[in-house]
Length: 233
Ligand SMILES: [Zn+2]
Image 1 (cartoon, protein in one colour):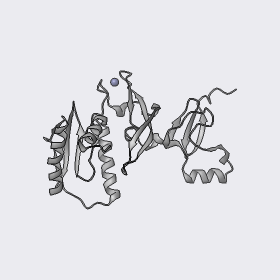
Image 2 (cartoon, rainbow, N blue to C red):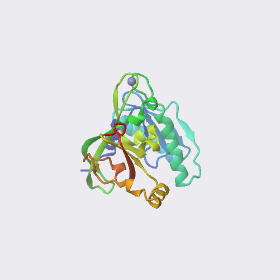
Image 3 (cartoon, helix red, strand yellow):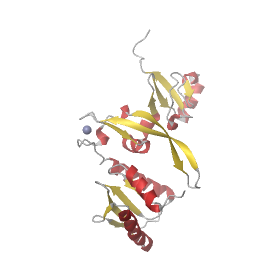
């Protein structure tokens, strides 16, 4: 069963967090979800195709009962950027937006103790691949807690990475251990100095507790430390 453009847009918008960015592929348009069933168009590229897409998208989004706020839309010049530069620019935009995400009590998510984020496995979900086939994909979220009102907020792993930064993705805590991903130069130095046995190569499960590890940790070379290392026997 093919998903219609309306169904696809609806499912994207419903999943998008408040303040989250949506850039439909290849249209030169950037939307931010804001308020109940409303998206704000924040930028449109200065090309005829982007201008036409803007009209089409508006009809599509309004057709599924959402509102489009175009009052602050900025028209941006198309720059001759390499793919890498485009990616960098997009990352900066996403990071900037992440700074505006707030808890219902008003505390910015960026002020949460993000290093204490708890990875939660939410089972599997069927995903539609671009070739039309379906695949079961593990669903994970990272639970972060508000330091002001104690609310626990489940965050998409990608959003968590935006908020907490790349370094937070290099450290992973199980119930007993803390793993830290080790980069290649450090691995080489450690092996040369014959301390390589304190390194571990991770698979799907924690070799100590048997806990399921989140995908980004699997296949990583890590050093590890017991969380109870203070209590020597
Ligand atoms: Zn709060």
